[in-house]
Length: 293
Image (cartoon, rainbow, N blue to C red):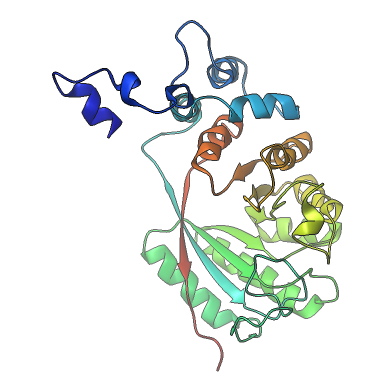
């Protein structure tokens, strides 16, 4: 709509008909934080020492500045015409002991979801082959567990899944809850590409969302994953926290050398692209397999 109005003749300039145009455009006389940090990132490369104030200033930049300069940084670091297609499969669904208030897989809530056991090897590999045939180059496996501690048999099965899928020539990602240092090393040895472990919200707001684990529990797993040499995939969502809270996870994760993305608000999309400048764009497909029988 903005573009159409700006190219039609005999119309007032778009900036005069927009409500609060400063939210979309920055003044030509003053560079936004998004513009300044994009130039610095392209010139000097990524950094891991962001402060909350710096992140907030980027987040508060005009929307079109975020999108434009975020795209500039991404194009500098990646082939902008490529999007990696990934397939996500739930290999163990429901029955999780955590009380995450946003998750239907928690056993604490009556969501109508039936808990299932870990999928067997043949079913998982068949799903991975199907994903590869459909064009996916990364296969992601998720298990509804609080952690993998005390699950030696299941964990060893997953290590086999990782090895087999890597043997197909695909990247492999897992999200298995909290893991120990030795388990992270074992996943790395098996060939795991990335580990998904979300921070969800700020340390301060965390007890309002989850009470069965702490914010530091999550950071500890991220530390084990990073030290094992596995790429980290982590996100912060809009959980009802205020605008200041939403910057905290990014600051904490980057201080640990992690890459994190914001989910939900479109404003966060540009800021996330700006800060995680060397991140590829991924297109995820969710694959559903009935393994209840």
